[in-house]
Image (cartoon, rainbow, N blue to C red; front, side, top):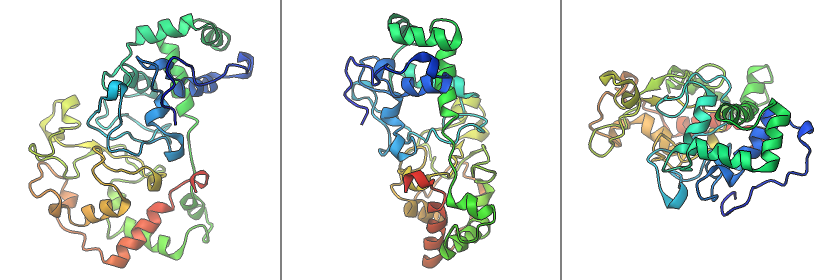
Length: 303
């Protein structure tokens, strides 16, 4: 994919800078291995375009084969988000954009060194000057990457259905939508335009023994946030497996089975949301309909 680009920029700079804008520059940077310590990884190595800018492994592999402990979320449909990362430690896309570059288990390149590379790179340096009126700096690098991510907005058959096209999704998906809003209780967390409330919830994957990631609490220092993670958007969810903050569920069906009876998976969860206190008692056909609805949230470009 975007691996193995040792010592090389991913793109050929044949297009003149006056034809570009900040988002186009951000796209080139997003795809370029120049922003990793050993020139082997780009942002797109983990945020893979063909999988809605998510990854297909439970946790992504950084430079030197290092693994983190959280799943790579999609970079799409981020324009309306209120915070970023599973623990919400960044409040803007610009702030988010630089953190993976410096993270030692991701790209492992200090921002000042990334800026030095871009300034020494004659074509990148000129692109920054032409677009922003000055040479690369941390603020402009963050701006370009964030502006590109803001272009990654998608629609879906579900949106067409909500706009009045009754044939946009199947009868099974429509039944699944009803389950989503009622018996399944999904709407309690996954609401608003992008099917996320931008809240932090503990869905029961924290027991301080096997599941030890404390999530939001590590940032907020609030014991009430133990095990809470950001509720992700469900857009394009059919192609962003594996799921949950730790990538522990491989399929949508596993996710549905978990929410149906979470005690079967984690029997001694700490601080679990009260929404999950009782089994949903979904039937087999209801689970199938709910999955069909979730698949209707996928943009046409991925079908």
